[in-house]
Image 1 (cartoon, helix red, strand yellow):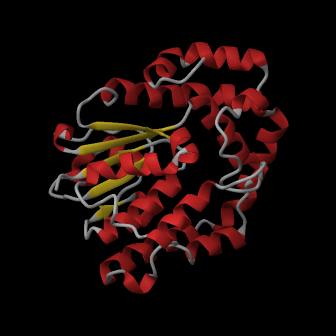
Image 2: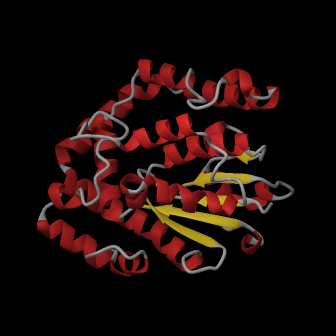
Image 3: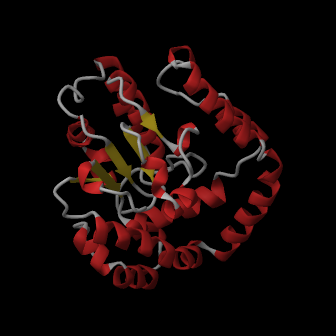
Length: 275
């Protein structure tokens, strides 16, 4: 079985991808290294030093920006992306409406594994989980500063925020398009397919894991996974605020959309998103 690399971006269902991968690799008895589990470095470290991959086999991710991996052609790579215009809109609502406080930090500390029970993990995994959650708890004091920043961003408006973040995320998407899109070992998946045709997306997602992966998760769990996208309307305080594709057309001014269309034109074409 080849090792699997998962790349994505923020607000493309990346936490759902993590939780699904965590459960799937557990069913396949496959090692899983993830910044979300606390057993792999965060992106700033990996971008500067990819030696953390050396000597390891299994599944790595989800990594939310490209980082060079030695002999990446020997991995099965999953690249899961979302329309960058919708992603930027979703990030605005995340940072301005989903303000973290002590209760949320404590809740996250108690909810490391939403799909498989803590008692089913190994002592080594429990140790990594404990380290990760202690780091989260150490951030309890910063929630006031985050709320102040959220208020400032909200005052500036969504169009201003999106334009300020566009360059950073264009560089991330452009790196994916240059380094990964079109490579024979790369499966390009889209958030839009995940939320509108989950079964087909899931089938494509599991292929890089090898034979037996698609059927590794049973019926009741599959129903739980499908239900994640059965949303009606919009909840701005929720982590999954709105899953319907094309949200940017309702939230942004026409002139802002035009600027984004021009900036991301090559990315949108490479990923087959309409302008």
